[in-house]
Amino acid sequence: MSEMTRTLQIISIQHELAMSIGLDLNLDKMLQLFLDRAKKRLSLRSAVVFKEAPRSRNDSDILCYPYNHRPDDTNDWLTEQVYEFSQLNVQNVCRQRGDSYYYLFKIPKFGAISFERKRTPIDDIVLNALSPLFSRLAVSCQACLEHQNLVDEITNRKAVEEQLRLQTYQDVLTGLPNRKMLNINLQSLLTNAQQHGQYGAVFFIDLDRFKLINDTLGHSVGDELLINITSKLKACIRRDDTLARVGGDEFILLLGDIGQTEQSAVGKATKVADKMLGLTRDSIELSRCAVFTSFSIGIALFPSPELNVNKSIADQAKQLIKHADIAMYKIKHTSRNDYLFYRHELQVMSTFRSEVEQRLHVALREEAFELYFQPMVNVAGAIVAAEGLLRWHDEKLGWVGPQEFIPVAEECGLIVEIGQWVLRQTCLLISQHLDWFAEGKLRYISINISPRQFSQPHFVAQVLEIIEEFTFPH
Image 1 (cartoon, rainbow, N blue to C red):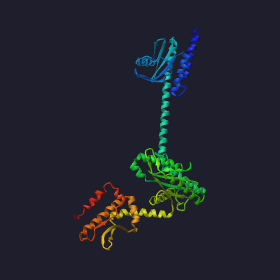
Image 2 (cartoon, helix red, strand yellow):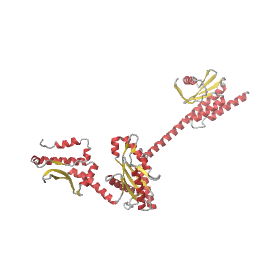
Image 3 (cartoon, rainbow, N blue to C red):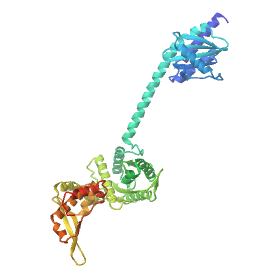
Image 4 (tube, one colour):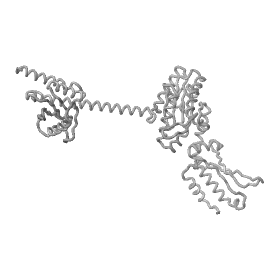
């Protein structure tokens, strides 16, 4: 081979390897391309890139490892050679093992590369021509790493943004839209209904006995039940309908385009409600147990004369949800496992209930209740006992019957304090009229106790504490 031919061959090798550097921003692909061309042009048996020089003889980080049919101990031997090479202040070395020659080159600030050639060594002139390539390879490797870091940062940022978006508009447990997404969809439905004259419906769905299940069987069972119920509810509706979770055990369903007349809308909404109630006729089978539950459903149709069209769409959406909530509350506190369409009378009842709750706080603070005692007589007509009955006359509401204020007091929790007040007033009466009992006029006085009071963990201790405030004969 002439000197000119030899020179051209070396230049060709150098040029081809140089051109393979930086052809891809993916580090693995770029290095693999460089190694493949080096193996072909230099007649190598193998080529290996070490991403970093091993920190110890037993610690290596091999990025590309295209060995074929090698003795089992060759890899360990090569790792050891790279480790020793990393300790030397040289750019390349040659090691011989058996009939193979191993050439180690440093890739500055990145790692090292190993070429293996069978039987014949690489000419020194070729090695000298290759040396400048590794500095260029190091720059390309660094560029690939920086590009990958940038891609990873963008990917992570997008993942975080997507997670934030989901948390903003989606319920984490069930994957359903949350209240914010619900409001957006409802406003869109209201606008569409006003423009095209199509009826829609809002279902406020409450899962009965959920708190009891959650408290007795645990939150994991409660979560599983919610996920199970979500799946069942979604099977009852159309793809374009919106089912959202807006509270612990509360869901809201939006139905659009269910008719151009109120009668048609009522019929279609009723079919959906009946289908939902049918979901809980049998027990719900969970992974560890079976539970029984039911739905209380309030339904509000739109467009509706009860909606104030002078208000914004956002305010109308809030009003519509409130209407469905009022209907749900009514059915939950009467029969449960049923549905009820909203009507204006329910709004009046809800407003009155809210006023009762507010005035109950005032009545308890000012001791505005009255205790009446109903006599109990024997067959001879003689009074032998009495029953204490709570009555309430409010300066704003007038006379409020027990059937109206007792359920409200139980729901808002005031019944516990009211019950303690009744017991204390009864004990006071008895302590002031002990002669009634001493003379045998009365055997006892009874009072009513709410189940909410019985459920208090220190109920007995509280009763005894009030009784001990007074002096009674033993």
